[in-house]
Amino acid sequence: MGDHAAPGGGVSQPAPQGPLEGMTPSDWAAAVEFGRKLFAGPCDFVAAVPTIDRLPPITLTEVAFAGRSNVGKSSLVNALTGRSTLARTSNTPGRTQQLNFFSLGEKLLLVDMPGYGYAEVPKAEAARWAEVIDLYLRGRASLRRVCLLIDARHGVKKNDLDSMDWLDQRAVPYQIVLTKADKLKQKDREDLLAATAKTISRRPAAHPDIIVTSAETGEGIPALRAVLGLFAAA
Image 1: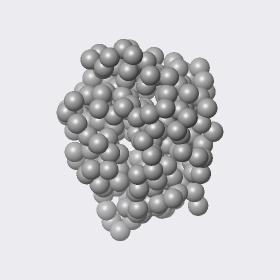
Image 2: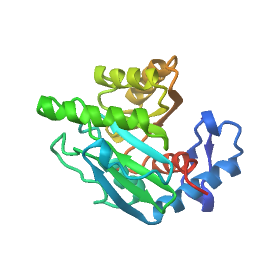
Image 3: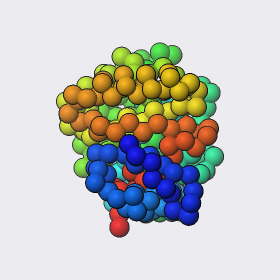
Image 4: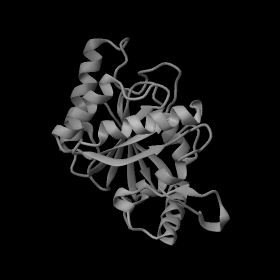
C-alpha cells in the first residue's frame, strides 16, 4: 500500500488496493475528501429493527458492521461520523440487541448489528438475534458490504471464522476491519496483519484489503470513510 497525501496537506492515508487499485494519488485524495464530507454531513437515526418484518423499505445502498461483542462496533460508527453518542456504546457486551439503521446524508445507510459470541446472553435471545441477522444478510438486496470487525488485541477467533464461513457460503461480500489498533506494538501489528491476510486469502467473499483502525486515535478512519464513500449515492 502506498501513502498518498490528503487534500490540504493533511495526514497522508494508505490507499487500499482491490477496487481502488489503479487509482492515481489525486483520485485517492479525492476519495478521502469525499468520504470526509460525507461523514461530516447529516447522520440520522432511521430505525431499530428487532424482527425482520420491521426492516425499513429499501431506499439506499447499505453497509453493515458486524463482529464479536465488545469489538468496538458502536465506537467505530461514532468515530466515523464524528458523533460521540450516535451509536450506543457500553462496557457491557451484548447491549446492541437490534439492527440499528442510520442514514448518512440520504446517500448511504449504516447498519450497526448485534454482536456475536457473548456467552452471558441467554440462548433464546442469541438464537433470535442470529435468525434476524441471517435473514437480513441473506435477503437484503441493498446490502453492498459487511465490515467484519476484528479486535486487534485478540486477532481472528473461531466465531469470526464461523462468520466468514457463513458469508462465504452465501456470497455476501465482506471486508476485515481491525479495531483498537492503538493497543498493539508495531511488531505485533505486523504479525497480526500477516496472519489475517493469510486467513482471508482463499475466501471467496472476502475483500483482500484489511483496514486498520482505532476509534481512540482516529487511525484508519479517513481511509475507511473513503472506501465506504464509494457506495454512496451520487
